[in-house]
Picture 1 (tube, rainbow, N blue to C red):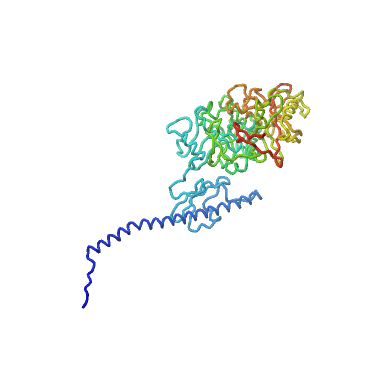
Picture 2: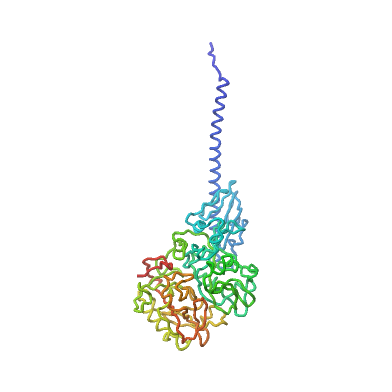
Length: 567
């Protein structure tokens, strides 16, 4: 006898189907998400492998180029996506965009596993259109915090490029764009949030020189690139920068054409000059770029004259036989800020700090104990110096100010260590202990720098061996970087950082103008000429021990308001 089994009822079947459908509805997105996450993970892994391959290839290329400058590298600003397949196996990935700025990879977009990966400044890849997270401590993030919609002064947004921001207005309206970076105090001109790039200009003049031949101003790109002022920037100034700073400076296009058509001539390089439109955009006279000092722009007025900013902030033009201030302009990748509020007294700061005189950077400030009886360095008996250059066993430093009394240069322009000017120089140097001071002889260039000079290196044709001297034309900080003035209000430095700021409006250099006159720096930033029988300020230059005799810093940040300390 068979037992009869009952089947599922229609209602039971419907219930099972509904349950299975619900399970499917729940499970399918989860499964799809797992699959998609796996695709993204695999794609990001592939993107990282491609990035590693590019970096390794370009590092090898750079090494070959260092050994042979004629070697043709792929990793340059002209590099494109097609070049990448010669560097690394792309697999199924494609390169949507790649940009090299100088020797730095600044943009990389890769499609892999049906997803787009964009390289962020952090070195990580952002997926698809999610965008790169911005470092809350980056310089650009700090600057963006100053922006207010609708403002016409301070930080404003460019009307044609929503990613570009720039500063315009007076120092009262633009008081928080100071950056201490690489041994120099900079002002931020502009920044691009999409490119993560910031354009800077030196706050202080770095030197005072003739920009070009007295009879010919640049009218072509080649002439500008070989001009005296551009050679100084791209050779002398560039080589004074620490390698860590050099690596973060991007190629930039500089407009060096005639002032009515500034992009008539352009040049792409690491360092350049401010152009006339940038100065006007900032507000011209009485703007934050007006330092009440003469300084050159990158534009000519005619074939025989160059544009410059007058001491009252107005634009003018003059023969290149004159020697005015030089202010460098650079573009850097965004950096992380560790302190400061962007003001003159508290610049934005980054983390690189020296520990001793061997790894100090050119431009940084050092406080050195002083035992002289002439109160040359104030009641704290600490002399503030600024690093001019470095060699294997010493660093050359210049007093960040003047000695307390003026002095005649001498009875003639022929200088020696027994010359009149050496009386105050030797007295001052003896007040610096041999513990710190390198007492051996060093070479000082004492050649002529006439209006017919070919370039700043002309002074090197005559030398003097000494342990103490004066600033040399064409060297770093041989202009009005301390802002000479008897006024109690300094225009571009903090008066509290200067030794004896009101001693004189002028100071001597070690170079002649002619057989009867000596080159002299004045309060407007010009190189003038003065009879050696006159009295003028004295700005001492000495050497501190370095190399195997390096002296350890006991404190400080290396900035004007917080110099490194030797005790």
